[in-house]
Image (tube, rainbow, N blue to C red; front, top):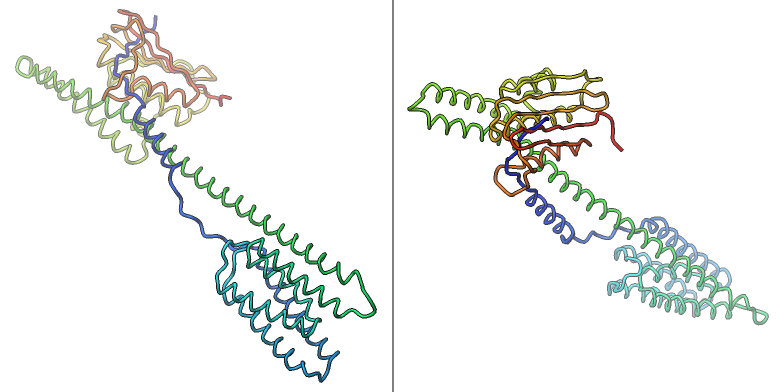
Length: 427
């Protein structure tokens, strides 16, 4: 029977889980600053087109009036009002852009719009041919006022256009002059409002996507930080913590035997010094690339396990041959598991002999750590402590690689730990 004893107090992941929850709650509850509203990209081309159309219609209306009514007394007033309307309209962009459908436009913007509409109405009363300048004014009102107020303004402008067309009509009532302006106004307003709402939906969707991407990136950073913290805790437990524990035991034993058996005490001190040297190498390796120091010295996993077994006075054997090189993650995990297992054999099993076996089975690699120590009847239960992760760390390493960790033990018959890791991707 293959047996191994593992009686180290196992740490829990309560602190890591609590920190994970706190980080996630803070991430969900954190208020992000409001993002400045981006300008409507459609306005970049629609606004210049509407401005150009307004001045074109204004110039055409003035030219038509001068050609049809030369020398009239109202001509100077028409020219003066046309120039005034053009100057007022030019002041619009100077006052700054207005957000579409804004609930409360700026007072100076309202005063400017009122002046433009008032001058236009006076022009229409004096010269009905200026009525068609209302089409660009529809756009200006819809861009400046809230939806309901803009619709009222469009209705007022349309009524003036209809009245002007009836005044220009000759030869009786023409239904087109009454129905065409409202139809044009309705179509233009509907198209503009539809485009405005579509643009608002697109902006909201883009904002949601940006916010979701930021939240996802923050979550990934938190998860990566916690995962790296957990990995480092396992690395430290399997190397530095085990080494420091061994040094403590050896130094305590040397202190007890210093007077009675100085030679044995000095041997314990030298062994503790050797372990300290290995721990120093591991600590330096953590600073550089966190790779196991034994693996970094060359020779691969087999040589690292052979050196580890020699230091722990354990036998080492390799069965089979690898089909290609093992991934670095697999080599690092198996070496850390062997380090933790042999450390517990040394500290708790009271074993006379231990053996490490590395077996290649084609589609998987198996690491066995066996001893003839005291063994146990039931698997030790996890309990909080200061010693580290212990068995949960080993299981986590194997589980991350898609493998399995099994333990066989019986009182007085020793224990064996077996870690099997597949060499092909698992579904």
